[in-house]
Image (tube, rainbow, N blue to C red; front, side, top):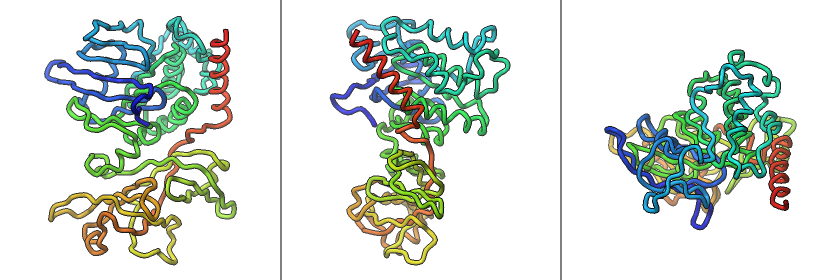
Length: 397
C-alpha cells in the first residue's frame, strides 16, 4: 500500500538536470513491501535509485522513516557510505577471487554499527535464498540465477534500511527468471525491509509489487497501490495489450474431486485450478482484461466457472474508429468490492448498453495464480519470527 498521512514512509522530493534529461519527482513509498518504479527507458527510474543511494545528487529532500538523508534547505546530505542501503544491479558483480561464503561475509562487514540491532542472520539469509549448497563455490562456477541470489544475499547481510534493486533479472533468460522469482517473493514476504524495484517487465511487477510509481519523462505520472493503478483507464497500464489486475485472495475452500481451490477476494470468490494451499493461506491472483466478458443476465449452462455480479464503474473513452473498449467493474451487487478490467468490442459495449452504473455479470475465463502470497510458508514465517525475537531481545538489553 502507498503510505498515508501520518504513516512512516520514504519521501522523495528530487529535481535537477543531467545533461538533456530533467528529473522532477515527488512521491512517497511505504516502509515495508515492494515499491516498483515503472516506465519507459529514460524516464528516470535508475536516477532515482542512484539519488537514494547518494551516488547522484540532485536538489531536494529524501527522508527514510524518521531519518533525513538529504535536505538542501537544512544543509543535510548523508554521503553514500553512511546510508544503510543494499544495492542489487543487473549484473551480480561478485568478487571473483572470493567464495560465495566470503562474498556474503563481505556484505556483513559493510553493515553500519547503528543498524546491527536485530540484524539479518547469515544462516537465515542463506536458507531464505536457497544458497546453502553454494557456499564453497567460486562465482565462476555459478549460473546467472545463482549469482543474483548471492548478490541479493550480500546486499541483505549489509543490514540495509532500504534495499534498491535495479532490474536484477534483466540479464536472465525466462527460465532463470522463473527460478529466482520465488526467492524474491520470499524476501518480500519474510523481511520487513522496504524495497525500491526497477523493472521493464510488467510480469515481475505484478508478482512482486505492492505499490507502483509510474514515470514518464522524468515525472511521476501516477503513484499508488498496484491494483488501483491497474484499473485506472486514464493510465497506460489499462490500455496495454497485456492489461490485467492483480488481486490478493485467501483460500476459503477446495474441491478435491476436481482439484479446484476457492479464494475470497473483496466482493466475491474466485475458483482457481489446482490445489493451492490450506484454508487462510493468501495468494496473489491475476485477471487479464482479455479474459473478462460481460452478460446482462446471469449466465446458465456455461463452462466458465467464475461468473460474478458486478457494477460498472467506468468505460474507456473512444473515437469512431475504436474497435475495443475497456470496462472497469467492481465486484458485488453494489460494485464495492475489488475492481477488475474487461476488454470487449465497441459493438458489444454499445449493443448491451454497458455504461457506468449498470449492474451486469462478469464472466472470468481464467484466473492465474501469481505468487506464493503475503503469508508465506512455515519456513518464511519462522525466519520473520526469528528476526522479531532478536530485535525484541536487543531492545530489552
